[in-house]
Amino acid sequence: MEPRSAESNTRTRNRRVVICICGMAGSGKSTLAKKLAEKYGLAYYSGGDALKALASEKGYKIDREGWWESQEGMEFLKQRMEDLEIDKKIDVKLLEWAKRGNVIFDSWTMPWLLKEGFKIWLDASEEVRAQRVARRDGIGSKEALNYLREKESKTRDIYKRLYGFDLGEDFTPFHLVLDVNSLNEDEAFQTLCMVVENILLRREEKVFS
Picture 1: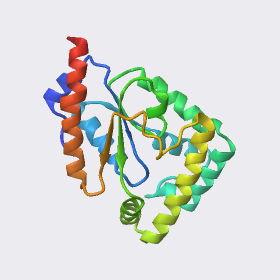
Picture 2 (picture 1 turned 180 degrees about the vertical axis):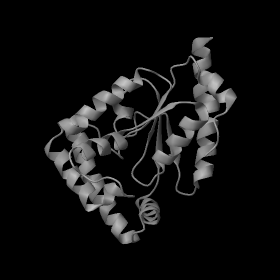
Picture 3 (picture 1 turned 60 degrees about the horizontal axis):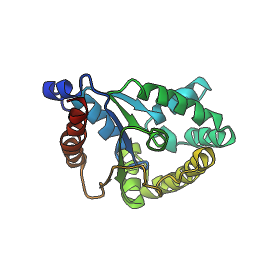
Picture 4 (picture 1 turned 90 degrees about the vertical axis):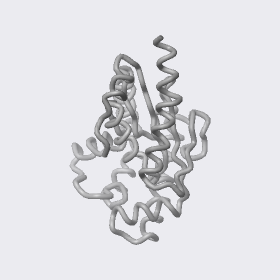
């Protein structure tokens, strides 16, 4: 991970930068959001991490790679479907954090719930994402694909019932849709850095100048 750039930190200081990185599982949103947070001195918040912390409070053992695709992760997903207040509670907290500014979110809901911010969708095919998840979690591609399909179908249902949007199908909130199917992690990161530098930060400088 690159060290924070002094110039980047200076440019974001005293700004109200809010960035949302979104994409389906295996698209690289968590990794890229963390790297952008480090480079530009932004606070990083993950909707998935917040949900896992809540799952831990409820007695789930979350300390394993690929927990969301595990049997326990799927059990917690079932619980979320039965109690929509679980997700709503997390989203209220994320919205509070957004008010502080200089934040980057790895979240499936913030692009729709936030009125402000620069919103990026990372687009990757189901097959590519399944392969990435399989490598990450040390499972077979077919098993990863089955988990992804089940998880994403139920997650879409949660957000459709809660907020009315279609995750992975509605791209209207996004300022940028980036195809990452053929990009490695570094290529995707450098592309997003160019976008942040040349579009987002310049726009913020005009507002504050």
